[in-house]
Length: 199
Ligand SMILES: [Zn+2]
Image (cartoon, rainbow, N blue to C red; front, side, top):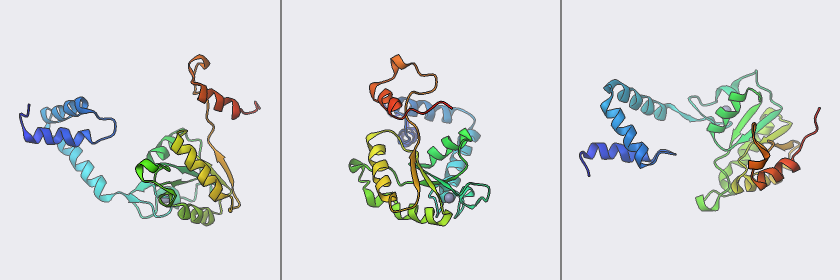
């Protein structure tokens, strides 16, 4: 049933967003159209303005609105550590913890033959340049513990051997509040192999 081509087009556009299925897209579209017009128009203006003004930082490749991002240009950040992440969204998650005060480097995705992301796509040369620019001593690999994340971590580890840096990975194991009876075997295996000393 197509009451309106415009409504169908809006639903189709919303369905392209990650995590939004047909039902959610329909609910969002009809809610936008039936509420105060200002709400929808503001949303559309924000999307357009962000898309037109946001670019990749030329040093770390995080999405931001400057040629060089706030983190790369800040003198308050620690030059010793560079945290390698898959996407800008990971930077937001790590910044929210306030546990890390170093620099970042955003890979162009993770190694994935299905998505045509090979070793040439990871911008490894740019990461090596950044290590030199900050004279960093540690590279932290904060990548997903998926097959793609593992493959990427091993590839990076191999490439970073020629640099005078310590390569670390974020710890993987039992989640906070997790019950060992409900943790899958792989996670538990990692938790045991990456155990840490109590101090
Ligand atoms: Zn940057």
